[in-house]
Amino acid sequence: MKRLLICILFMASMTACSPAAFGKPNCSSGGELCITLRAEEPILYGKPVNVSITVISEKDLSELTVQLVAMPQSIVVLEPKSEELGKVIKREQNWVNWIVDTKSDQPVIITRQIELSEIEGVLSVDAQAFSKNMLAQETISIYMTHEGGKVYYSGTSIPYTPGPMPTMNESQLATARAWPTDTPYPTLTTAEPKVPPTPTMLIVITTQAPYPEILGTAEPPPTQKAYP
Figure 1 (cartoon, rainbow, N blue to C red):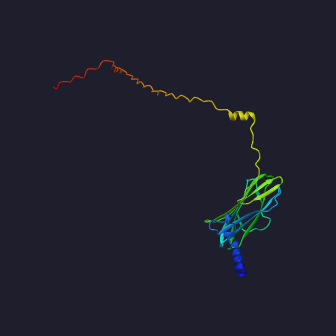
Figure 2: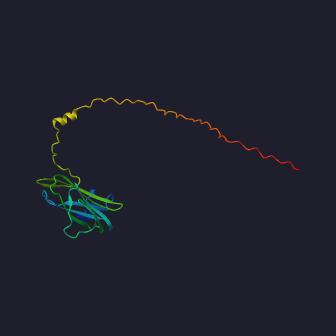
């Protein structure tokens, strides 16, 4: 019985170490790739937050893309303080993309700091690991106030009371309550097409001038002499 219990515990520990059990909601559809995202607490107002991404795969994978995105866009993902796994291929103020190679059942861990400045409210941090045919993703929320921040992981609700809805003054209320009066539709009139006037043809008849007269007397033709 004792030996059977040991075997059961051993099999349970092996299952817990497999990618499919590495947080099922954070794994790919086939369970061959999983990711976890963690934020280090306590979180102080206006101070950077340490976040870590852990990626584990069932088999060796090459050129796997890992992405970290923080929202709103005013958040800054800081540069690493030491050498990190993976190669940065793209980055903007609030997100970074890496390329990593994984070995079977060997976690790849990337750690960065995000600078929240003086932001209050709900912040979102998302991590993804993906290739052409698989995707693993996890999103966490940080509810930040002047007293500090609280981390809420996937599947947990954020128990906070929203602030009062914005109110309108009397003039704005009067405008909102006013019902527009009916406006008559414009009357369509059909204009008669204008026919351009028929051009008139001007015919000019000219009289031919008389031929010039030949002045002077014509000489008679010479008389022929009779042959002898």
